Image (cartoon, rainbow, N blue to C red; front, side):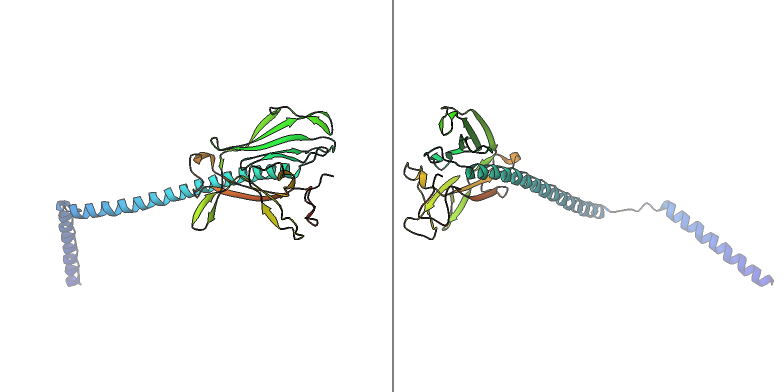
Length: 258
């Protein structure tokens, strides 16, 4: 119908007019973010970025600390295995008892780590506080077992652990430093095998009575060598080493050279 066509034309013309008007409005519209809106958006963005950086820093720090502790634990465990193996290998040379001298930071003894029963070495484990190092000195003897003579200076020396320090323990409300080595004997006139702590340095009378040596130390990651042992990064090792010359079923006899 003619009337309908006219209505369609008018509607089309109106749409075109509205579209042109809208386009002119958009071209002339210069509005955007206001300064307060921009500052607010920037502030929110900075907070988000800082939070992300803090999370990343914590993750990296935690991963590094875990790796440091694992490294210290591995070195400490290996050193403790070497120390306990050598202390358990104490032997007498003829009538001479195995422990020659001992104090809080060192112990000197005869040991046999070979398959030949008719041989022995003099060994010394010593901790040097200033260096934070534990050393092993080995003295090779000359002569025919059991008549052996040993040099005044070590034949060889090697480092067993670095960095390390004395462990700490809680006594009452304070923490005290523990010695690297502590020595025990059976309590006199008892059959229970109870142990008694010996004073150091060991006297000539106490050295032959030692039946157990307690070894304790703390290791630190090498990256944090200057840190103290109260750091959360320190790992403490503690072990009791029984002398194989002592029969725990016969405590009244003490260590016996066979």
